[in-house]
Image (cartoon, rainbow, N blue to C red; front, side):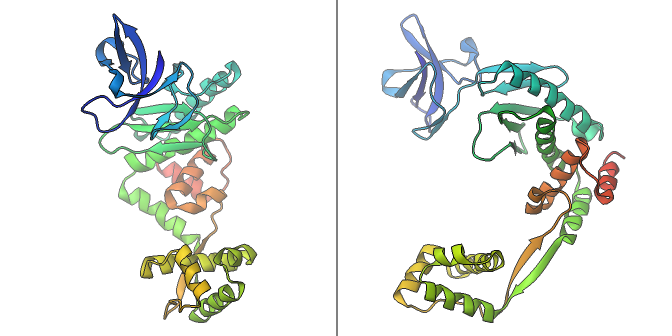
Length: 308
Protein backbone atom coordinates (compact mmCIF):
# COMPACT_ATOMS: atom_id res chain seq x y z
CA UNK A 1 0.00 0.00 0.00
CA UNK A 2 3.02 2.30 0.10
CA UNK A 3 3.05 5.34 2.38
CA UNK A 4 0.35 6.88 4.54
CA UNK A 5 0.01 9.77 6.96
CA UNK A 6 -1.67 8.38 10.05
CA UNK A 7 -2.30 9.20 13.69
CA UNK A 8 -2.66 5.99 15.70
CA UNK A 9 -4.87 6.12 18.78
CA UNK A 10 -2.97 7.44 21.78
CA UNK A 11 -0.43 9.47 19.75
CA UNK A 12 -0.32 13.28 19.86
CA UNK A 13 0.57 14.05 16.24
CA UNK A 14 0.29 12.36 12.83
CA UNK A 15 3.35 10.76 11.25
CA UNK A 16 4.49 9.26 7.98
CA UNK A 17 4.34 5.45 7.86
CA UNK A 18 5.48 2.86 5.35
CA UNK A 19 2.87 0.12 5.18
CA UNK A 20 2.39 -3.50 4.15
CA UNK A 21 -0.35 -6.09 4.43
CA UNK A 22 0.16 -9.04 6.75
CA UNK A 23 -2.59 -11.62 7.10
CA UNK A 24 -5.40 -9.13 6.60
CA UNK A 25 -3.78 -6.55 8.90
CA UNK A 26 -2.18 -3.29 7.77
CA UNK A 27 1.19 -2.83 9.42
CA UNK A 28 2.99 0.50 9.52
CA UNK A 29 6.55 1.46 10.41
CA UNK A 30 8.41 4.77 10.55
CA UNK A 31 10.30 4.70 7.21
CA UNK A 32 13.75 5.30 8.71
CA UNK A 33 13.50 2.30 11.00
CA UNK A 34 12.60 -0.46 8.51
CA UNK A 35 12.49 -3.08 11.27
CA UNK A 36 9.09 -4.61 10.64
CA UNK A 37 9.13 -7.28 13.33
CA UNK A 38 10.33 -5.04 16.17
CA UNK A 39 8.99 -1.58 15.30
CA UNK A 40 5.80 -2.09 13.27
CA UNK A 41 2.34 -1.28 14.59
CA UNK A 42 -1.11 -2.15 13.29
CA UNK A 43 -2.89 0.74 11.60
CA UNK A 44 -6.69 0.93 11.46
CA UNK A 45 -8.80 2.64 8.81
CA UNK A 46 -10.01 5.39 11.17
CA UNK A 47 -6.38 6.28 12.03
CA UNK A 48 -5.24 6.88 8.44
CA UNK A 49 -5.48 10.50 7.30
CA UNK A 50 -4.32 10.11 3.70
CA UNK A 51 -2.85 7.44 1.40
CA UNK A 52 0.22 8.69 -0.48
CA UNK A 53 1.08 5.75 -2.72
CA UNK A 54 4.46 4.17 -3.38
CA UNK A 55 6.28 7.34 -4.53
CA UNK A 56 4.84 10.35 -2.69
CA UNK A 57 6.00 13.83 -3.70
CA UNK A 58 8.26 15.65 -1.26
CA UNK A 59 6.50 18.26 0.86
CA UNK A 60 4.26 18.89 3.84
CA UNK A 61 0.98 16.98 4.15
CA UNK A 62 -1.32 17.65 7.12
CA UNK A 63 1.64 19.14 8.96
CA UNK A 64 3.84 16.07 8.34
CA UNK A 65 7.02 16.43 6.29
CA UNK A 66 6.99 13.72 3.61
CA UNK A 67 10.43 12.72 2.36
CA UNK A 68 10.79 8.94 2.54
CA UNK A 69 14.23 7.43 2.95
CA UNK A 70 15.63 5.98 -0.29
CA UNK A 71 18.33 3.79 1.20
CA UNK A 72 21.14 3.65 3.71
CA UNK A 73 24.66 4.19 2.44
CA UNK A 74 27.66 2.65 4.17
CA UNK A 75 30.61 4.87 3.30
CA UNK A 76 34.07 3.49 3.94
CA UNK A 77 36.02 5.59 6.47
CA UNK A 78 32.89 7.53 7.34
CA UNK A 79 30.02 5.26 8.35
CA UNK A 80 26.31 5.02 7.71
CA UNK A 81 24.41 7.77 5.94
CA UNK A 82 20.62 8.01 5.62
CA UNK A 83 19.90 8.98 2.01
CA UNK A 84 16.58 10.69 1.22
CA UNK A 85 17.61 12.06 -2.19
CA UNK A 86 17.32 10.40 -5.60
CA UNK A 87 21.03 10.29 -6.37
CA UNK A 88 22.64 9.31 -9.64
CA UNK A 89 25.56 6.89 -9.55
CA UNK A 90 27.95 9.78 -10.21
CA UNK A 91 26.49 11.87 -7.36
CA UNK A 92 26.70 8.91 -4.99
CA UNK A 93 30.35 8.37 -5.93
CA UNK A 94 31.14 12.04 -5.30
CA UNK A 95 29.54 11.90 -1.87
CA UNK A 96 31.30 8.63 -1.04
CA UNK A 97 34.58 10.37 -1.85
CA UNK A 98 33.91 13.71 -0.14
CA UNK A 99 32.43 12.69 3.24
CA UNK A 100 35.46 10.60 4.38
CA UNK A 101 37.87 13.35 3.29
CA UNK A 102 36.02 15.95 5.39
CA UNK A 103 35.89 13.65 8.43
CA UNK A 104 39.50 12.44 8.24
CA UNK A 105 40.89 15.96 7.85
CA UNK A 106 38.70 17.18 10.70
CA UNK A 107 39.87 14.35 12.97
CA UNK A 108 43.46 15.45 12.46
CA UNK A 109 42.63 18.32 14.80
CA UNK A 110 42.59 15.80 17.62
CA UNK A 111 40.47 13.31 19.55
CA UNK A 112 37.85 15.99 20.25
CA UNK A 113 36.62 15.51 16.67
CA UNK A 114 35.11 12.07 17.17
CA UNK A 115 31.51 11.71 18.35
CA UNK A 116 28.32 9.83 17.51
CA UNK A 117 26.50 11.51 14.66
CA UNK A 118 23.47 10.84 12.48
CA UNK A 119 24.18 11.89 8.89
CA UNK A 120 21.50 12.60 6.29
CA UNK A 121 21.48 13.46 2.61
CA UNK A 122 18.28 15.28 1.71
CA UNK A 123 16.75 16.92 -1.33
CA UNK A 124 17.39 20.64 -1.93
CA UNK A 125 15.48 23.00 0.37
CA UNK A 126 15.84 26.69 -0.38
CA UNK A 127 19.41 27.98 -0.36
CA UNK A 128 20.62 25.61 2.36
CA UNK A 129 23.73 23.57 1.72
CA UNK A 130 23.87 21.95 5.13
CA UNK A 131 22.45 21.94 8.64
CA UNK A 132 23.72 20.83 12.05
CA UNK A 133 21.19 19.97 14.75
CA UNK A 134 22.68 19.89 18.24
CA UNK A 135 20.95 17.65 20.77
CA UNK A 136 22.64 18.04 24.18
CA UNK A 137 21.09 14.85 25.58
CA UNK A 138 20.95 12.89 22.36
CA UNK A 139 22.72 12.30 19.07
CA UNK A 140 23.43 15.26 16.80
CA UNK A 141 22.33 15.25 13.16
CA UNK A 142 24.32 16.52 10.19
CA UNK A 143 22.25 17.15 7.06
CA UNK A 144 23.72 17.70 3.61
CA UNK A 145 21.27 19.08 1.05
CA UNK A 146 22.08 17.57 -2.31
CA UNK A 147 23.10 20.24 -4.82
CA UNK A 148 23.31 19.10 -8.42
CA UNK A 149 26.76 19.44 -9.95
CA UNK A 150 28.72 20.16 -6.76
CA UNK A 151 32.30 18.95 -6.97
CA UNK A 152 33.77 16.65 -4.28
CA UNK A 153 35.83 19.61 -3.04
CA UNK A 154 32.70 21.77 -2.61
CA UNK A 155 30.98 18.91 -0.78
CA UNK A 156 34.01 18.52 1.51
CA UNK A 157 33.75 22.20 2.44
CA UNK A 158 30.02 21.96 3.24
CA UNK A 159 30.44 18.81 5.33
CA UNK A 160 33.49 20.23 7.13
CA UNK A 161 31.53 23.41 7.93
CA UNK A 162 28.77 21.38 9.58
CA UNK A 163 31.24 19.15 11.43
CA UNK A 164 32.89 22.33 12.72
CA UNK A 165 29.61 23.22 14.45
CA UNK A 166 29.90 19.93 16.31
CA UNK A 167 33.45 20.78 17.37
CA UNK A 168 32.27 24.18 18.63
CA UNK A 169 29.25 22.82 20.50
CA UNK A 170 30.58 19.53 21.86
CA UNK A 171 34.31 19.76 22.43
CA UNK A 172 35.54 23.32 22.64
CA UNK A 173 35.44 24.72 26.15
CA UNK A 174 34.35 28.22 27.14
CA UNK A 175 37.91 29.54 27.04
CA UNK A 176 38.50 28.25 23.50
CA UNK A 177 35.17 29.59 22.25
CA UNK A 178 35.74 32.95 23.92
CA UNK A 179 38.95 33.41 21.92
CA UNK A 180 36.96 33.14 18.71
CA UNK A 181 34.18 35.35 20.07
CA UNK A 182 36.73 38.06 20.90
CA UNK A 183 38.34 37.71 17.48
CA UNK A 184 34.94 38.04 15.82
CA UNK A 185 34.25 41.18 17.85
CA UNK A 186 37.38 42.79 16.38
CA UNK A 187 35.68 42.78 12.98
CA UNK A 188 32.51 44.42 14.30
CA UNK A 189 32.17 48.18 13.93
CA UNK A 190 29.35 49.98 15.72
CA UNK A 191 27.78 53.17 14.37
CA UNK A 192 25.22 55.49 15.90
CA UNK A 193 21.83 56.33 14.43
CA UNK A 194 21.07 59.72 15.92
CA UNK A 195 17.64 61.02 16.99
CA UNK A 196 17.76 63.50 14.13
CA UNK A 197 18.36 60.71 11.61
CA UNK A 198 15.36 58.79 12.96
CA UNK A 199 13.18 61.94 12.76
CA UNK A 200 14.21 62.48 9.13
CA UNK A 201 13.57 58.82 8.40
CA UNK A 202 10.00 59.05 9.74
CA UNK A 203 9.39 62.27 7.76
CA UNK A 204 10.57 60.54 4.56
CA UNK A 205 8.31 57.57 5.27
CA UNK A 206 5.34 59.94 5.71
CA UNK A 207 6.17 61.74 2.47
CA UNK A 208 6.52 58.50 0.50
CA UNK A 209 3.49 57.03 2.29
CA UNK A 210 4.80 53.48 2.47
CA UNK A 211 7.35 51.69 4.63
CA UNK A 212 7.89 49.15 1.87
CA UNK A 213 8.51 51.80 -0.80
CA UNK A 214 10.86 53.68 1.53
CA UNK A 215 12.92 50.53 2.05
CA UNK A 216 12.89 49.75 -1.67
CA UNK A 217 14.00 53.22 -2.76
CA UNK A 218 16.61 53.84 -0.06
CA UNK A 219 20.35 53.34 -0.22
CA UNK A 220 21.78 50.25 1.57
CA UNK A 221 23.05 52.40 4.45
CA UNK A 222 19.59 53.95 4.93
CA UNK A 223 17.94 50.53 4.72
CA UNK A 224 20.22 49.22 7.46
CA UNK A 225 19.34 52.16 9.73
CA UNK A 226 15.61 51.76 9.01
CA UNK A 227 15.82 48.06 9.90
CA UNK A 228 17.27 48.95 13.31
CA UNK A 229 14.48 51.50 13.86
CA UNK A 230 11.80 48.96 12.90
CA UNK A 231 13.33 46.44 15.33
CA UNK A 232 13.30 49.09 18.07
CA UNK A 233 9.60 49.83 17.39
CA UNK A 234 8.73 46.17 17.68
CA UNK A 235 10.83 45.47 20.78
CA UNK A 236 10.00 48.61 22.76
CA UNK A 237 6.50 49.53 21.56
CA UNK A 238 5.40 46.15 20.06
CA UNK A 239 4.54 47.99 16.85
CA UNK A 240 4.98 45.82 13.77
CA UNK A 241 5.80 47.09 10.27
CA UNK A 242 2.18 46.58 9.25
CA UNK A 243 0.97 48.60 12.25
CA UNK A 244 3.52 51.33 11.44
CA UNK A 245 1.98 51.50 7.96
CA UNK A 246 -1.44 52.13 9.56
CA UNK A 247 0.02 54.95 11.64
CA UNK A 248 1.57 56.51 8.53
CA UNK A 249 -1.65 56.32 6.53
CA UNK A 250 -3.77 57.77 9.35
CA UNK A 251 -1.31 60.59 10.06
CA UNK A 252 -0.95 59.43 13.68
CA UNK A 253 2.07 60.15 15.84
CA UNK A 254 4.86 57.59 15.56
CA UNK A 255 7.07 56.79 18.56
CA UNK A 256 10.73 57.67 18.10
CA UNK A 257 13.62 56.97 20.48
CA UNK A 258 14.78 59.82 22.74
CA UNK A 259 18.36 58.67 22.36
CA UNK A 260 20.50 57.33 19.54
CA UNK A 261 20.31 53.75 18.32
CA UNK A 262 23.23 51.52 17.34
CA UNK A 263 23.84 49.44 14.26
CA UNK A 264 26.77 47.16 13.62
CA UNK A 265 28.72 46.14 10.57
CA UNK A 266 30.91 43.04 10.37
CA UNK A 267 33.87 42.70 8.04
CA UNK A 268 35.59 39.35 8.50
CA UNK A 269 38.40 38.20 6.20
CA UNK A 270 36.94 34.70 5.78
CA UNK A 271 33.66 34.66 3.80
CA UNK A 272 30.47 36.72 3.60
CA UNK A 273 28.60 34.00 5.47
CA UNK A 274 31.05 34.24 8.36
CA UNK A 275 29.65 37.69 9.21
CA UNK A 276 26.52 36.29 10.86
CA UNK A 277 28.08 35.11 14.16
CA UNK A 278 31.24 33.93 15.89
CA UNK A 279 30.30 30.21 15.55
CA UNK A 280 29.67 30.69 11.83
CA UNK A 281 33.00 32.50 11.44
CA UNK A 282 34.72 29.59 13.19
CA UNK A 283 32.97 27.02 11.00
CA UNK A 284 33.77 28.93 7.81
CA UNK A 285 37.40 29.37 8.88
CA UNK A 286 37.81 25.69 9.76
CA UNK A 287 36.15 24.41 6.58
CA UNK A 288 38.24 26.83 4.50
CA UNK A 289 41.36 25.58 6.28
CA UNK A 290 40.44 21.96 5.52
CA UNK A 291 40.13 22.60 1.75
CA UNK A 292 43.20 24.86 1.66
CA UNK A 293 41.39 28.18 1.14
CA UNK A 294 42.37 29.90 4.40
CA UNK A 295 45.23 32.39 4.18
CA UNK A 296 44.83 34.64 7.24
CA UNK A 297 47.58 33.66 9.67
CA UNK A 298 45.54 34.63 12.75
CA UNK A 299 42.90 32.07 11.91
CA UNK A 300 45.40 29.39 10.94
CA UNK A 301 47.28 29.87 14.21
CA UNK A 302 44.08 29.58 16.28
CA UNK A 303 42.98 26.46 14.41
CA UNK A 304 46.36 24.83 15.00
CA UNK A 305 46.03 25.70 18.68
CA UNK A 306 43.01 23.36 18.79
CA UNK A 307 45.34 20.47 17.95
CA UNK A 308 47.39 20.90 21.11
